[in-house]
Image 1 (cartoon, rainbow, N blue to C red):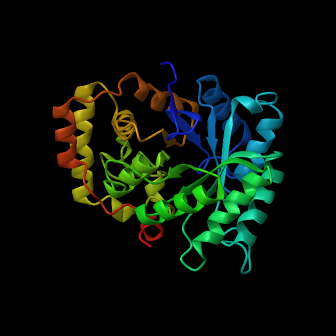
Image 2: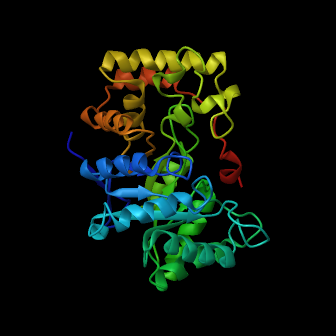
Length: 331
């Protein structure tokens, strides 16, 4: 497997087809040596993009702190070979200024993130979610300010609707800071970006990095026989037991059969499937082990789908009520 790099929209920035997200497994609840082994191997395999957010942990902020330690040691001297992103938008600290999309929160959060990681700047700074109670000009203007302050090279948005994405792109165009990228949830069981958001991204020349391409772990072989003890669905979090309905599990099993015929695991097919459209710059995956990371990377060995395969997948790859970020993209 040789890593592929794709241009983000009409920008000059290329991202690896698979990027590493530090949402899960990189906080204070995971041994540091375990984390660094995953990040080191990802970099060795050509994953040059590491995606974070201010609140990743637990506790919030600890993923950035841990990654900062890696930048100072394992990745020392490699800053210019990396694209590092962070975000602000969700609950981060007490009081009225610790979440959503005010200028106050976004710029204070970015300063905190830079301090935790020991950086002068991030490559991409995101508005993590749309704030219905703050003027969009204020939220997006804060992203522009971050670039003008030299604290971010590019800006992005996450989980914004098609209409809000178009509006954000127009504001940034006026300000002179292009909208580089959109980060939505997207998978075979969560297809909300089709067709409206995809059309806007293509029209505006905005890149797309999709998170949760494995549908919070549903699109793996983990749940084919039910909910195993210790899995993500067995405790509170982004994977909820009610998502594993009989109907959804039937879809997962049918998709698994297609993957087997293709000579792939279900997870590998799920990653390849989100990358089938050139509008998708990168698939953002997590990893709980080096072995899991290596398995996900094998998806790049077979990205092509026949027309018949796509038609068969479409019969089972339907909305499954798993988009826990839907509220943000519906306003």
